[in-house]
Amino acid sequence: MPRREDGDGPAALTVLSDLPSSPVFPFNHLPGIWRRFRAGDPDWESLREGFLANATSSWGAVINTFDALEGPFLAHLKRGYRRVWAVGPIFPACPAAGRGGRSSVPVEEVAAWLDACPPRSVVYVCFGSQCTPTEKQGRALAAALESSGVRFVWATGGGVAVVPEGFEGRVAGRGLVVRGWAPQVEILSHGAMGAFVTHCGWNSVLEAAVAGVALLAWPLDADQFVNATLLVEELGVAVRVGEGMEGTTEPEELARVMAEGAWPEMRARMAELGRKAAEAVAEGGSSYRDFEQMVKELSELQT
View 1 (cartoon, rainbow, N blue to C red):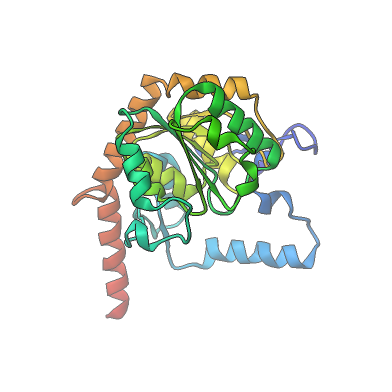
View 2: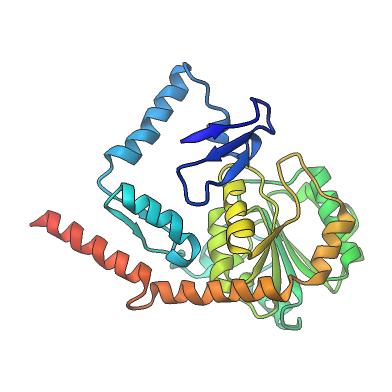
């Protein structure tokens, strides 16, 4: 069970003592649904009961993950619940051109731009489809990208206003700003990709893991701080560069990290994780076996 150690303020530590390695989080790094819970509030009590029912009353749980990414935590779940199947990594089956919505740069142009870049030379920046950086964060990102000298693709999602006026002109030739949807899987899997500045949403984590791209972690909310801790502290495939919806980072420091190009050791670990992701879904792999077991148990319900 979670245990509070240093009082009740936003920096108070919460220890998840039942989990492997007993991870520790400041209270303001816990998922928002937990931070906003208030005992006695009927709406939140109802939500809490729903979460508990999912955990205790469900027949089984199918999770988009794999052993090499979360092995000790999956083993912990499987000890408590018999039917837990890790079947990932799973991505949408439709092609890039049929997903996501409008974009300021066609998929073909993004691919052509990356084709002209040297291997492992591009930093990809994206904070997902639900979180938009603030104007202050956008200025810090833009300043870091501009002063670092690196090639980059910055996918802004709906946050057009985060791109400072005149920025694109100043970085013309080495930077590509994509407003709206971006073909993230295709970008990450391209040989030009060197590092990924990410909010650590789970889809982005899986896509980067499969591609073997090292992560520059800037978690914002929800499960992202938990995911970042797994990546930075447990697996060593990421480095923190910022945090929080209102937090920012020093542009000079972020530029330095970008320019270093994701250290060889971290990149090698992420490449190995990508190899294990492919093994997991191949015939005989851990996710393949879990999927087979899930199908077997579901089939038995029919008879």
